[in-house]
Image (tube, rainbow, N blue to C red; front, top):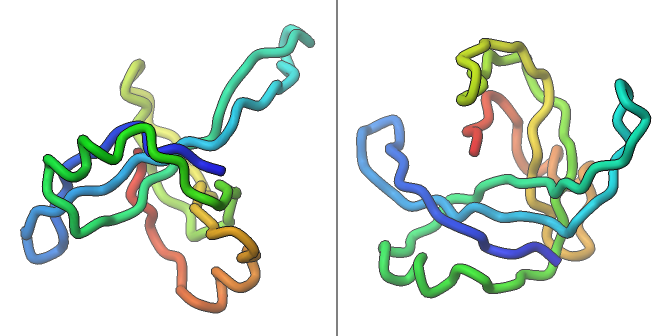
Amino acid sequence: MVTIIDYTRRKNKEGKEFNALILQGGIELVKSKETDNYYATAKRTSITSTFDDKTCEKLIGTEIPGSIKKMICEPYEYTIDETGEIITLSHQWVYLKEGETLEEKIMDEKVEKPSMV
């Protein structure tokens, strides 16, 4: 299950605004490579929607069957908001509906540059 935790307004290539829903997976415990200690985290991604602001606000907290998985894509630059550092990534986190596999998703769409959360 994933949970809608927020939404954000974006613009498409033509400049038309739309809302994207921010999804978050369940809590995961990950072991730090530097300290060898565990920390709690959760994967996040976004999906486009046709909903207005009011509907998006009402959807926050809704659980949806599915998961968030790592998918390899063409390298792209990403700016870390907190530090301003620009890094190059070659993966993105994608939502998979329940029962869908990464292989099926790759066949359904060609992944280029992701829109990051």
